[in-house]
Amino acid sequence: MAASDRGGARGKAGRAAGEKDGLIRPRQWLALAGLAVAAFVFNTSEFVPIGLLTDIGASFSLAEEGAAVMISVYAWGVMLMSLPLMVLASRVGFRRLMLGLLALFATGQFLCAVAPTFWLLVAARLVVAAAHSVFWAVVMVVAARVVDPRASSAAIGLVATGSSVAQIVGMPLGRAIGLALGWRMTFAAMGVASVATLAYLAVVFPSMGPGERFRLWQLPGLFRNRSLVTLYVVVVFLAAGQFAAYSYVEPFLLRVAGLPARGVTLALSAFGCAGLLGSVLFSRLYDGNRRVFLAASLLGESAALLLLLPAAASPASMVAALVGWGACQMGYGIAFQAVLIDFVRPEEATVAMAIYSGLYNLGIGGGTALGGVAAARLGVASVGVVGGMLVAAGTAVALALLLPRMRGSRAGAGPR
Image (cartoon, rainbow, N blue to C red; front, side):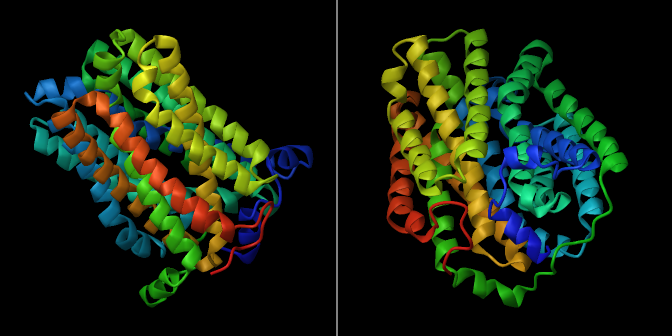
């Protein structure tokens, strides 16, 4: 990763600047569109089991809490594989790496579609997790490198939009396919989409060498970076809180909010649309006042989760809580990746992001497991409160220790 890329990661230009000044050329837009579609497919795959948890469990005579093991194992697999695979992948050019990841990802999806037992399904999901662990470690860095450094905020925002659209269209569509044709067809459809994305990127993605080689002896230096370590601690709490609730959002909406199956799909679409709103707000507002944007996003998600149970009293208040939750989690989710790149040296970026992805998935796995315990012992109605308390704890750490280390707007690198 060139030094100029780091400057781009600091947000020297937002989306509007990139469009106004023509900093992103047509060929670069095509490559970014391919990355955004890949992000859409990867994000859909990660979360679509949440929307089909009841049906997957029923296929193998498991309750939702038992079927949710596949979510925890997937997340922990990503956590364990992120760093070693990323160190190995740092030798590979970004173009070859992206195409290889999509091929591995597609293979895993087709294996999921034909898995005859639950544990073989979990094993197939680990194949997908291997591709996931590297993809999310590099995709934002790659997006920033595809374009002029001054337009990197726009590039990151576009790829993040692909992730948001997965929640709007991908997860509900995957759920609809699963309800109509069986959950196996959902995984098969994602495999086909992966192959199509691979073919598209093979045509439009530019030749691109690997980033700066990272060596293991550099790893202790990352953990001496106090700002980065604080970010890592915060993200574990936030991911755990997010998924203590989100992993059980389908049974929560069905049993507690009393929504019909179609209403659950529409509610999940509203959550996804709110994620797109969070992405747009990031592009428009983040560079203007970073601390305020992050504080508002974190406090907003804490409130939305803590109010999830009372919001279940009516469909309107339920959707309002989901919209607030979705917008806030997407807003800080994108912002934290920009903050991370800002906190590290160029040669550290991909491995620092791999550790971030691994720890985020540690939070996903732990939060899903904790949410499962809460659902089994206290009822699924409790998952919002459990998740909200974890997010509130992460928010407190962020407000006290992380945000003061950031510059207020369009910052340079924070202190180490």
